[in-house]
Image (cartoon, rainbow over all chains, first blue to last red; front, side, top):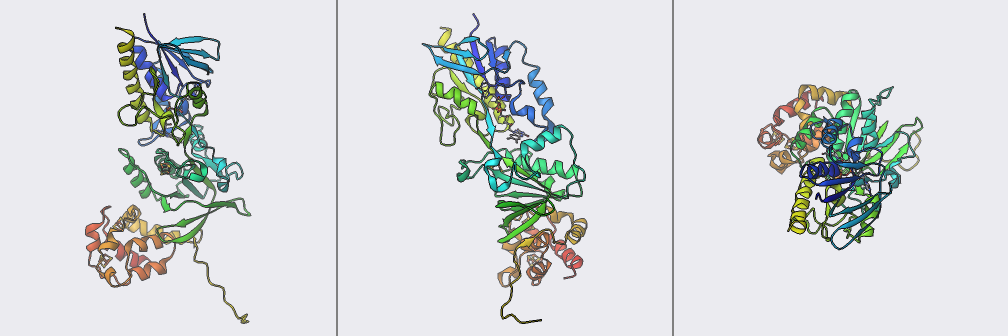
Length: 337
Length: 108
Ligand SMILES: Cc1cc2nc3c(=O)[nH]c(=O)nc-3n(C[C@H](O)[C@H](O)[C@H](O)COP(=O)(O)OP(=O)(O)OC[C@H]3O[C@@H](n4cnc5c(N)ncnc54)[C@H](O)[C@@H]3O)c2cc1C
Ligand code: SF4
Ligand code: SF4
Ligand code: SF4
């Protein structure tokens, strides 16, 4: 008999783990609340650090999904732990009895309008990293071309007042990548990145930074403190250039906010039903953060991807593979004696 | 001019809208490596002149980016072109050559 495995969330983590578990011989049922599979990956145009088209990566993953039962536009209405399996009622009326569950509910993008001083939703020229990816996907080009464009790092991250003291890990690389792409699109424009620290930790990331510098992008160390509209409808941006200890102002046509990663609300809905523990940062807490990142405190309940904190795509995929391995081990130890 | 008995001090705020970007662009063509500076401060830390006078290539580059060439001039006025900073720059910038180009383009 094939054991049933329920995967909640059809983003990169859920997709990768599902296809592997299916090839291991399990009966995998995946529930995704949205119409389309792919999670946030489906919203990105090109990926840092090497600008690989996100669509290619996603299509590769979708091509391995044969054999997995995928239910889209489907949420988990209720889930509870029976003696040694999970009983889940899905919103499409189907009930699943699963021997193991993988939660891959990912993240929600920080709501940039909460940082009112940046004017998102108020001024037309202010957009988020996600909005810019969408514009890139659609191949949109503004005319007349913008003369000056700024990127604001750490929006809703490293900000206790915004409710999130943590770093979102992916947005420095995203900002530098998007700044390069913007400069390529509008070579005459002045492009600025306002950062506090540049966290270019991964392989090839520092190369991306150097490339941005060489293309003439100016890095200003200081957090944007306020944005106002000028009489001509442009954006007056103020920050401190902390490297010269002087206040600074500049008029821009666009300001792109690097909104950070927050825990998924619908992921929390699932977590509440099983009393899963959450850390101060709002993300689910793994059994321990060094050796048991994929395990929860419940037997047979596992995590992968951004539901346990900000992660890059490769991080997420590694976790999905580890989770598949942990689930396989768990089933073999508990159901096949 | 009428003396009102008080003076208005000029704003010390950097205004990038008014910065001379044309001159900096000329510098970047002559010395593309100027763009690679990552403000690490190694040049300033090892500067022979800096031990006695306020000398800093890092801040001079920053001043030029901010359109403050007078500040840059002051920060390089005691440079002896000894080339010590070239040995320590982690971005491999030929800083000595860069200083000469700055002096030429900005006629310091
Ligand atoms: C602006 C930005 C740009 C990025 N660019 C890059 C990049 O260039 N390179 C890179 O390596 N990384 C990048 N990342 C990181 C990358 O997006 C994440 O690592 C990845 O999306 C995490 O995958 P995930 O499956 O854990 O979560 P998600 O992508 O968030 O997917 C989670 C899925 O679960 C679904 N879901 C949630 N709750 C439920 C529920 N209760 N029931 C059913 N379904 C549910 C959601 O609808 C979603 O489809 C970027 C991140 C941001 C914010
Ligand atoms: S990755 Fe960079 S932009 Fe994002 S929160 Fe961390 S320091 Fe800020
Ligand atoms: S070349 Fe000039 S700036 Fe460089 S170390 Fe010598 S004195 Fe200092
Ligand atoms: S040593 Fe080089 S990189 Fe560092 S501040 Fe000086 S010029 Fe810039």
